Length: 149
Ligand SMILES: [Zn+2]
Ligand SMILES: [Zn+2]
Image 1 (cartoon, helix red, strand yellow):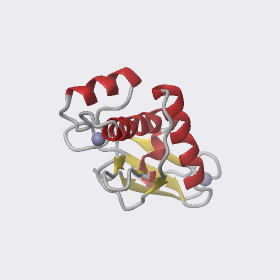
Image 2: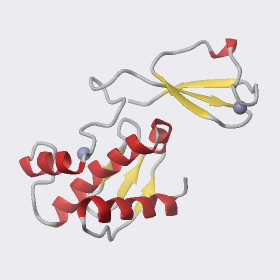
Image 3: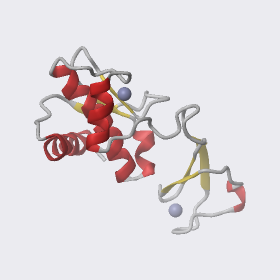
Image 4: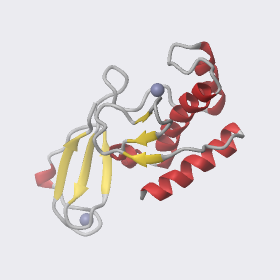
């Protein structure tokens, strides 16, 4: 997924779930480590962690909704912090994720298995002995990485 596609997705979720336009920039930031996304107070940009894409569109979309809650509340001068009542109730109303998956103390560690030949990625809760397996699609060799956070 490209930055432009992410931008479109964020704009669409903003309109359909909040009924409000997202007028700033959304982009991927591969340097994010323990968080699925973040909202920057200074330039109102939303940055998303591409390492969370293997969780699938639904989970990733819910992380975007979380960041959009920060965004809209902050721009409207309302309580945009995690502990604020307005944040909690808006998050619940739009169905956003309270915490990104894989954060310490919130979820079990996850492992991303990547096929070195075709690039297919899957997420597993348990570590596996990748040396013993091959890609189900192309029989390529597999690489295993622990999900950050
Ligand atoms: Zn947050
Ligand atoms: Zn493969």
